[in-house]
Image (cartoon, rainbow, N blue to C red; front, side, top):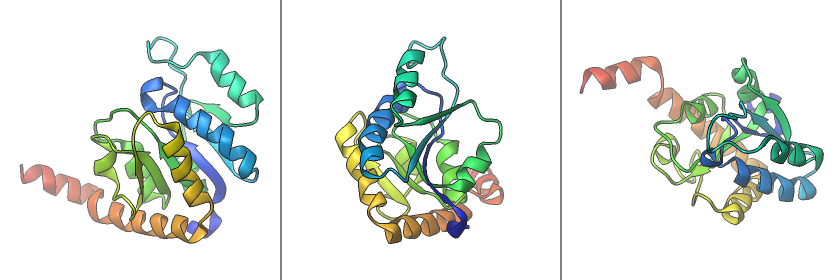
Length: 180
């Protein structure tokens, strides 16, 4: 339900450079100053073994500055999708991101990157906004555009839900696979 959501933007991924975590952190740092009533949540494991892992002290610096809230790995991610108004995944590359399907199904507006997988999960300017990867300024502008426009957040959320219902339901996916 769109009306019961909190003013929060969710980053639902492992905290890796390749997932666009640092771009999300930098955007959050800028936007939190302009929109202090909004929370920027990071829900994902900090994968220390990966060469793409964001160092723990970097995460702590952004938490201590008040830019982000770091939840770590979350078992019940559905709860955060249901509560968040916007989901942001500025990934450098994806297969087909389950997180963006879940975001749409949970009536979240989406900001993601114009890369394979991400661009296939949303409809630009209909269910969310696509931005160029590795670009903090464009990411910040896209998020700001939504934060300044309540109606656009609600429209993208509603359209995203309809898109998910039509394209991501289990019956549809099974039928598509059977048609291969």
